Image (cartoon, rainbow, N blue to C red):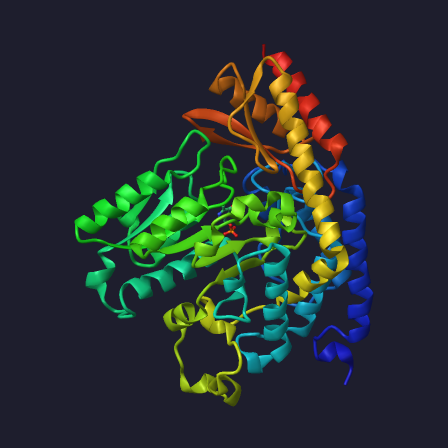
Length: 478
Ligand SMILES: *Cc1c(COP(=O)(O)O)cnc(C)c1O
């Protein structure tokens, strides 16, 4: 039969177009600085350029690539630009992209060990490697009673931690709505929004989440946490989980894990530690003090898809007692039964997450770790931290600017001293210029600019350029 009559792309055509796509990506990285960092399209521009109806007859891939360049690229904000300083890093790398391509090519579902043993075993292995690389407590390794698993995001990690904590706190009587209404969860006023989302999804309701006050450095106050837990217990409530943060989103604040862990031990509450962005820094021994006290945590997560050259999605989630997690999340329908699972000798990661199906994400991480080696990763993390510190020094030396919070790692929060309006205008001017992209937060009630360093190709010159840009625009606002 003529290959055009089965509609599929032939292996030869795949080879040809595959090379074109790889070439496009390589060219893109070479030219990335020629694009405005923040996309300039207006709402609706992209859709208006697209044909209203899907094609009746299949089209040629070279035409699709052409349309991709013309119609899609203008609506892209260039997260991989070295001038991207917004939100948090979301860096990627050649080895990660290629590992993910292989994963797409295999097209497997790694939901259970038996559905592709290598997917499960490589994942377990790479997560144990990472536990070593970050010097995480031994209890998080699969060789003991704990273990690591890849989630799509830190949001999912927090949610599954909360589900395990909820079930543990209610003695695994999952349908006991009466008890659910008594559960309480704790995070600081700086905790990530995903914690409140998890609380709602877990059926608790936002009113059951306590936002604990923070100190001058925006870190959770353990004494206030303790007072709140005691007060809740006195009211007959059931404290279920504390979500502490290592590196908050607004200002990179580090909650004191040692003191918080002591509270959780004393009160028998699950401690989840969210180190989504900052955790990667623990690959360098000099930054590991942020994890002091982690040995008392029940679960922990960090995102290689933020600061470890691994494309979205990849969140490493660790638990100290994997039975607590599996007990909360496993359901055994007949159609999934198999010998390997029943032998108890294997991990079935479907029981460690919300969905059943799962991507082979460990491949890209394996490629990244092997390509860079520990030394390569350390080199880049140290560079990013040095660049952020250099920027912070420029802020401190400038008469019109001030730092808004300490700079423990790669995030600088700062503001012009003339107030909110000037800072808002300044941010708008920088982002409109297309030369850099920064975002903002509010700290102590004041509009604050954030410079997050961590894209793969950000060098000294890029950070210097953005500081010069900021100073120049600030001069015009005077
Ligand atoms: C980025 C971030 C999150 C959310 O991460 P996702 O993986 O996108 O869900 C949660 N907590 C902290 C501290 C973060 O930095």
